[in-house]
Length: 256
Length: 256
Image (cartoon, rainbow over all chains, first blue to last red; front, side):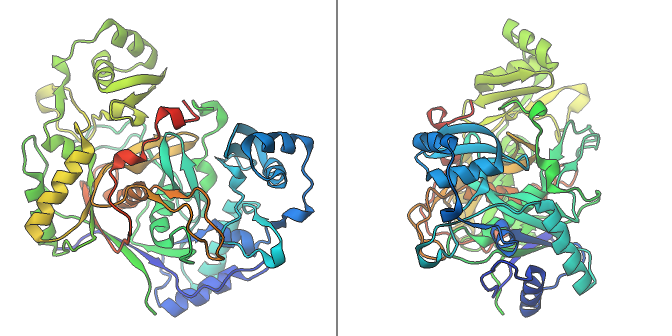
């Protein structure tokens, strides 16, 4: 019996990514080494971290001078004042600043902890403290990666740039899409029929977020070093829509 | 080159589920028909809907008498007053009641729209209006399903009961785990080392939620009729933890 199947395959052998690296070329070599494609409609999920690194988004905290506001907020949260200054420079509104937790609206519109600035899985050379910012424009990064891989392999793939977010009301982080190209990040099914012909009301699916969460199962979160996952077997019949479409604007938000 | 791979396979040929059906027997027949297992450490993800149906959680709205409070709230939300009465009977706190949207804390602790009560993909016989409630105890349901399938096949599997939730700050629903057995719903990695030996701070992963989101990619949301998905290739080294562990209690919540 034929069984609808989706496979999630980690790309092997990706070397550490440094600023200025040709990420599409590195991904292409890994795809060839694994002999798994890509084919049309495959989706390549890439950890935000290696996209940021390739784009040179590492900041040396020694170059950051904390403002008075950063020092004030740091006194409450207990975070490094220079890290708080970096968070402020990447953020619009600060939603919460309590011990251990700083939740902001990132300049991209994403509601997230610490403006997505990360210090884990980064080489900190000679005692320097580095911090990694999100890509300048993750949807743009996804599109450039898609175009480079499409051209190299003569295919039409989807690309998702994944990060791990905490959630309101629930423990634990899950993978979410902060950038996407070549697939509908949000699938609007309102007006379609259910199994018994009844109209589905208000059903919108966070398709790219579910893809990012699925890939996160393979990537792991600590020392696995598997920052790219090829997803095969997905189907969609909507136009491509960037991950920015997943962001609920403030005026439609009930919880801030 | 060996590539770490996770596969998501929809169980084929599941007939519509009715109250009192032997769901483990139906799932077992479908697994045998598909010839895909189960094996140790496979995770079977099952849509909340068929678990609720098998457990007889369908309510005929004709049997519901709306209270004055339900009629008041219904006047604001625009929902059916009898449906609102049902939502109230399943809920603790009402967090939001605005036109079209009612967000509650379900008696299980879950923060969700409409107390998880659903009217889609349900047969509504002879013009009757039915509504489907969540299982009484989804973690208990997951454990009973696991035990029945473990015994039948001589294996040790995980079971996740999945529902679709909206999220704060983001558009679109994604699959989440409302029940789980045989796997760690939440994986706490605080204290472990990252790639460069730096301690991961406060990393907790919503493992069962990511599994539910992944399976949702295969299940679809409308008329696909694929309410069970076998996930193969996951690894874990923590003790089993029910899905209730994913619920952030009110006193640790910054957003209600």
